[in-house]
Each structure stands twice: as structure tokens, then as C-alpha cells.
Image (cartoon, rainbow, N blue to C red; front, side, top):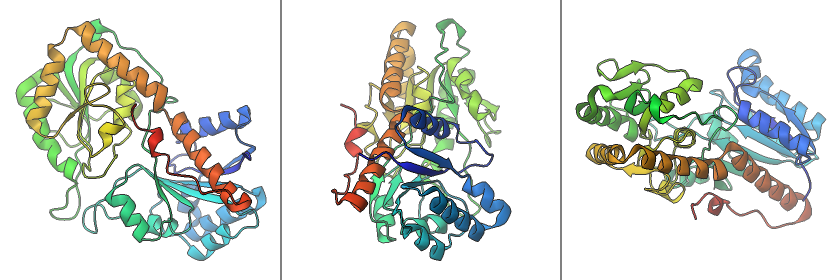
Length: 363
């Protein structure tokens, strides 16, 4: 298989934000997995010079670099110049083009799909998405040719730490989540709508032994205020059990990166259920799912009833599984494999690569 000349377009608020993907691709280049690598922080450029200039710059870089593959990561909140995008797609190097979207969306009223995403998917060979089901069906109706699953993963670059010590527990239970609020009347994501009810039930049951971090929870006595994204591991290492609930619990295979990053620390994780996500992380083995607040309380109480050593062994076993199968490196290896296959399809008349969904499923 040909090694790619990869143009990576990271979505960043500050140059270098995407530390995991940047390091992974740099490692791939050093290992000979890639022939060449070019990185352009497109959103930062577009915010300063405008979105048309951003698209022109992507075109210029792709042409000058002779990109075999373009990986367009995330969303940017502006428009996409489709005339320029057609020129990118028609470059002499016939690049394989993919985009990756890790965000969940609802409908025209509740977190609608951004126009930039709907414009982009018409020109990509593969749209990698963190969930399937209704999301994949919608993107295909909007012109996406192939929508493939690419779940979030464990960021081993930012969170590569196993610092748990049984004697250092300060809390029985910890939750890290912000209160999601829409500016639109009566608009609420399914999971976000359930969070206050879940927190109320947990606070009533576990009282001061429950630590809640995040914005918007001031009315709860368990609230500890916001926590820095890269300080989350400290909160997990001081707690016996962690709990969370996805904002959208109606998207097949969808979860944020939180379960992977949390489980990888070694703490047992209790999670709101998303359809088919238990095929990726098994219930009772890697994760512990609930559908109602009472089920959540019962799962946490059961975990806390176990001897510390048994509970810790369960958490460490799940952590080892996530670290062995669900890191960002694993995800980027799959993405590059697929994009290599797309390049071969375009240049060598090879079959179009299949959806890699089986690669994520627990054995």
C-alpha cells in the first residue's frame, strides 16, 4: 500500500491544541508510516483572514504539497466556499479526502447540524463520525457518500497516567459535566435534560461523598465548581467510582471521549446508556450502564459495596482494555488505513474500503 503524503487540518483554538493527533502523525512520519506530513490549523487562519481565504489556503497547500490525502478535522463555525472545494477535489494528485466529526447533533431546533459540515460532506470520500444511526442517515441524505464510524478514544498523549492509590480516596463518587443550556426555548438534548434529575438522585443518596465538577451546578451542595480539562485525572484518582451521561443518548454507538479517558485512569465508570455503545465497551466488564436515575444509584451502590481491592482490580482490568484497544493512536491507524484504501480506489482501481466498525467491537 502506498504511503501517504498527508495534509492534516486540525480544528484548534490555539496552535497546537490537538496535541494527540499532532504527535501521532509526527510519530507515524518518523516511523515511515507516512511519506510526508503537512499541518495547517485552518480554523485559526479563517478566524483571522476569513473563510474564503481559508479555503484558498487549503487549496494552495494541497497543490504545493501534492497531497495524496486530506484529513479535515472538526468544524469551524463559518461557511465553506464550495467552488474552491471542488477545485481541491479535482487536483491533479486526486487526493483522498476525509472529514471527522466528533460532535452530536439533534434537529433543526436542538443543536442543528452546522452548515459547514453539510457543505463539506458532499466533497469528502469518507465522513468519519462518532455515532451512526440517525446521524449517518441524515448526512447521507445531505450528500455524504460514505459515513463510517470513528468513535472517540482515549487520549494517551494528554492523560497517560495511572496514579490511583486506595489510601488517597476523598470521595465515593465523582462526576464531571457542565450544565448544557440552549438559547432556544424548550430546546434540550436528551442526556443533558436528564442530568439534573440524575444529580439530584445521586446527591440524595451519597451526600457529601459525591463530588460534582463543572459549570452551572451551583444549586447543588455537591458542586465543586469547574475543573481544568487536563486536571480531571486528579479528581478521578481521589474517588472510588465515576459516573457520567452523554448529552445525546439516542445516537447509535455514540459517546464522547469522557468514558475512554475516565476508564483509562483505572476508576470504575458508570454511564448513561447509548444504543449499541455496549458493543464497544461491555456492560459489567468495561463499563456499567444505566437508563434511569435509580438504576444509576443502584449500580454505584453495588460497586461501592465491593471490597476496595476487588473494585480496583475491576477498574484496572477495564483500563488495560481501553489502553490496549481504544487509544487515539488506534483510531488514527484505522483512519489512515481507510484513507490509504480510498487512495488505492482512486488511483489503482482497488475496491472501496469497508466500514471499519468491526474493529471497535468488544470481542
